[in-house]
Image 1: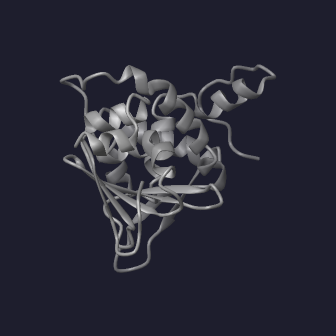
Image 2 (image 1 turned 120 degrees about the vertical axis):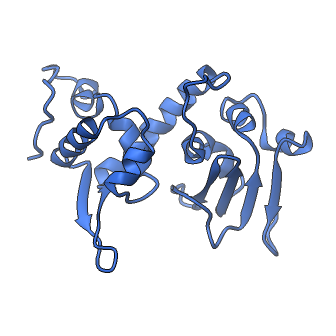
Length: 208
């Protein structure tokens, strides 16, 4: 049986309450967001979760291991480092994060002076838009960095940080346009037509 998180249970015989017993703590779902992009070292997680203390992050990861959302493994030499990665149950939270991102997109407005920004944070809000390009690998470039999304004909999607060597389509845009696309204020075709986004396809591929 999975070890129960350190927080007290809601003690309610309700599926939503049981889920919140596991993922309702501050930072837990944002750790899942980071690990959906692939295995991460503790230092990398800490760098991309600005505002979390080292003690808090370590505690959350321990709870998530106990709840069987996360596993830790040692990379072989020469890396000789430990990484955290999601279990199947942890990856099952992707639809939850997609729903939260869709619900929260209209509240983004303009970035606040205190807001941190990472390019790959736009991966989940843009999944629906990028799925419209068909089953392929799409690389997205922003001033803040790059990420890539893999969409499959079976409806499965994955995303990761950085460029993709096998990218079939490259999308260049900015965070304001990402926000508009995620919030449904703009379609990808409209963004390209307006000059707010640039789409380039590899040889033999077509887009839009």
